[in-house]
Image (cartoon, rainbow, N blue to C red; front, side, top):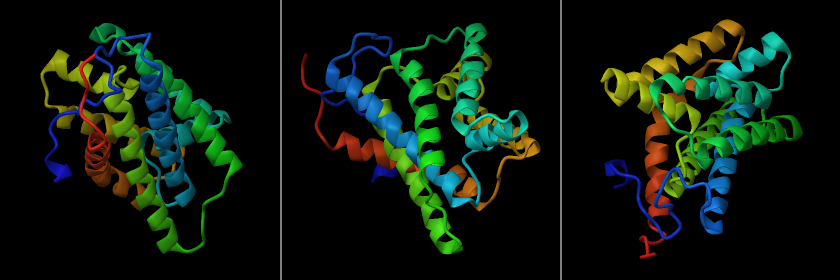
Length: 220
């Protein structure tokens, strides 16, 4: 059923305006919780050691090249992507800013303070699968908060509006470019990357469906 979702649900804590910089406390808390879960899910793919999600492939490549942490590399990537919004006429929201800060911080905290890796491939496979699902659930929470898209999502929608290509083709082009660049810099590409590439769409849909079941939006 969740695979049929076409719209982001409204719930009682969703913001009416994505450019709202003074949201209700529960909306802000939900946003931050979703981003924390998102960042932790991304770190699980790194721990799995069988291939990162596309943007973490790039972040890992940059960390190898410049001796940065994965989180700081992710932060720099986000700032660069955000700067690309300017000619596209995109406007950042509070969620955009928190996306940049929280995901980078959680990646460093989880990657460098915990170790979920294993010498058993099947366990690593399950870790990568769990990471993808976790990213999807986190995405569902922060998207439903409706406080502005993340830097990468904003780049995707901005390019789509400016050049008229389909969302699928724009996002695929971005992800392939990022993976190739990250792989060239030394980032880890493997079956985990494929799990994420093919699984993130259904995982996000599942996250939206799961959170959407909580309650419908109440009148304000």
